[in-house]
Image 1 (tube, helix red, strand yellow):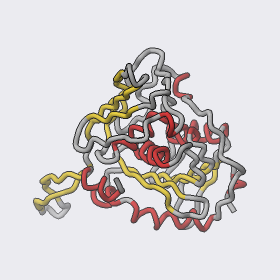
Image 2 (cartoon, one colour):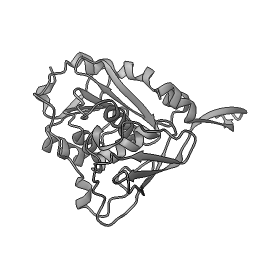
Image 3 (cartoon, helix red, strand yellow):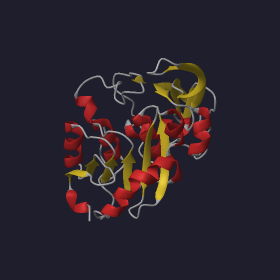
Image 4 (cartoon, helix red, strand yellow):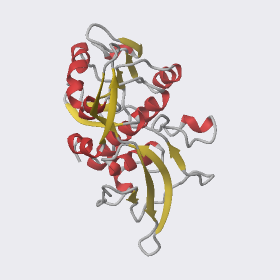
Length: 281
């Protein structure tokens, strides 16, 4: 499903009354972003003994639920590559459940305490049981040699990415994540009421298309860069993250530890580089 189709599922209309400072008011129809739950289940085990297990309940904007589920399973460290799931997967449009079928040979390792991840639109790590678990699963290094990205490409993102956010342009209530190659060509974009969901959707699309999730290039965040976003980026081997907003202290720490160039406060005139500035030319 492309971003335009996802937008249709993620927008609702409501009647509102607008008040003005001069004392007047008007009644009109407004567009709001949809926030609704989806439950993520997995089917696993050998072909003769398949089992079903609930993994998570995620508050998200509908559309791209399969990519969201696959990306979440990847960033949670439950799956690692395309071969861990069956070649054919079904997207359950308009439903509250998304099933991901694991490959018959794949033996998943689930959280030890058998917890179910509860993820709301504001929090991508709400299922973590303790501080140690927040460090997550980041076994992948950056792919190949460090790539150089020209500053002109980064400056160009400020205008270019506005047109890539139809859900935000219609509602003002969503976040976007874009994946570009090192030359600035768009590879994938996703929007969601939760920034971490948007990133999981992008990573899920990449995993569904590639045997191994080799995401050469960089990520663009339409808002701030929190630590959970950098953690997910590191999991995918990304070595450059560009954010419109500010990074957090822990995001900077994770970027430094995982050799990620972290850019923030990106606008038409300047941007800040917090780590590994040598990748910007």
